[in-house]
Length: 395
Image (cartoon, rainbow, N blue to C red; front, side, top):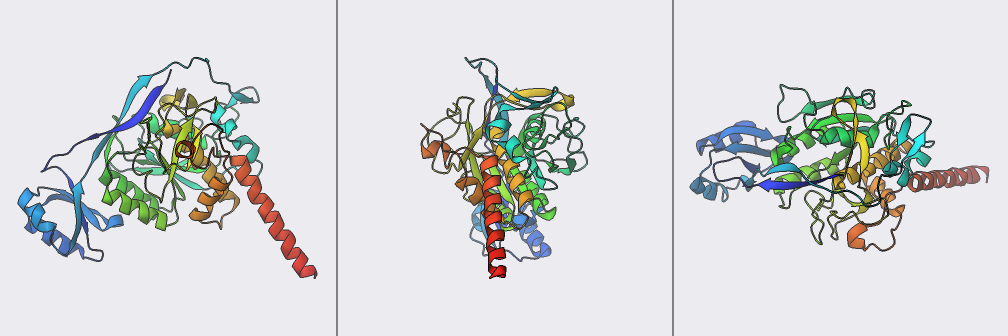
């Protein structure tokens, strides 16, 4: 049985929160004066995008502000919600897991992408990976050693505790520690950071995500996993994505679970992200995986065993789960070559992907992410480079 994970939007009405993008460089006092003069309330700054989120702007004021030279764009602070909707029993029964020793399990997806074969070369040591989601249950025995911190964006007075479960599941696939028990993640030596942008019901907003990305930039995250989305574009979100990418962060985004053509969600649509679709245990397209020309890669998405709140384990399905496999591989690559930039990581992931027969490019992009191919091709390139340098010095 599994839960279909996807996002729905709750339409905001006039008088609710709005995001105002302003000309970069404006002083705080000028911004406050401008907005308060026109009735804005509950003003909260979004420095990453030179914007603010606020309430209290009526239709006439909005019409005026849109013509103001200091105002670049105004949009609704779109609300999103994570819904567990559909449970499906696979006809071929239980997933097959490869065991390590007697107690620790390598989940099928982690083995399918060759992560275990890549571990002799890299385990993602000390790479900073942020999980923008519902938080992380940091006391889990498979996560405790690797969770290094985080932030609660939606309530700064409370910790980043996961009161939903989704974020903890994602964290386990990315970086469950190699402790001889439970499961092991794709990159078992990463530094995991919880950036809680969703509440216990999976509710959040574009402004929360923007603030979360700002935290990632300020705290030098190297990879960010974004297993959320919306079917509506947002200039504010795109601006934040571009800012984070410009800071050198590898941005991995779930494509969505709409299960139809041309249905990739935002932010996965944006070219600055790595858009991830999903496959099942039989190398078939995950039935709910969104499709479209924006898809960059696919990864295991069905019945993925990972960590759960309270210290246990559970299986989930969705492109949320697929994205975490790619996030883990990106961490492996960064740890293996600290000098490689985010563009180089993206290129390595795509050029070493495994083409899945029977799937169109709009369904799989470059193909299935492969940790082993990516790591060992990189090692071959390093060896050739070293050999060339030695040859030149000898001659």
